[in-house]
Length: 371
Image (cartoon, rainbow, N blue to C red; front, side):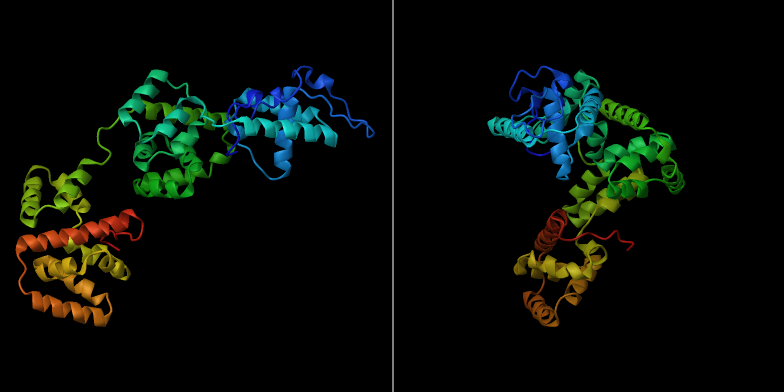
């Protein structure tokens, strides 16, 4: 539960209820059913106090992440809940007050285990350092391996899904969020995707310990993967460079790639998004956002200087804005006359950059070109 201290003694991520008052000795043998007339708090063991807090929170529909506890702690908690029957109000009040005192005394809590520490440091240390720390530690990380797997990018998970058996793939997709599973399934060849989808229907009989071992195995394989120096694929990096290159340079590079590696060249073309692609990759309903995100002087230069395939984009943008605004821009295009090629390229790149910014902010989504 967010906000609970991490060093809660016997109950793992909960506060150490056993240290709340008394010496914590006695176990369940100290505990008798309270006399209705008795007004003094009953003495409870450390573990019994933890069970009281868990039961109290559960009665208020607060579900604690108990699955992250080691198995022996979960078993002990179940035993404590089984042995307890009734406690009087004074005992409950005493346990809660001591629990709150511990909460108020804690100024800052830290994540348990190496994986928790690396999650805190994500973005602050290099991927190579994270990989080295994991490798040096082996797979002795605390917590649920599935939580870590769920946070990974699909590009890290996809190779595992492709290489593992259909049954393991079915368990993997079943443990991820539906949206991420759907994305991964769409990236698989049709036949394998169908086999894994069918195998998911057979996972109801898989034992929890088997699912846990599969998670540990997958996490270990992910740890064994070497750290990548570049986050993006080579085709994406080349495509990003060519996006903002002069059209003559871009065409020349693509022609050369066609001669040396046609398949790579085709993948690069998919990652290129230029002014000429706006007409087929931007939804007409998003044109207003694009226009608002670019200075009008820059937009006029881009529209006026667009020639060849890029001229289609000029008409596309003008068609998808109000008639009054489109007429005004047409007049300005006529007034500006011929635009120098370098100025037109710079203006068109600015429009493309504006669209990329909108895409990055989630304000628009580029079409695939086949939509």
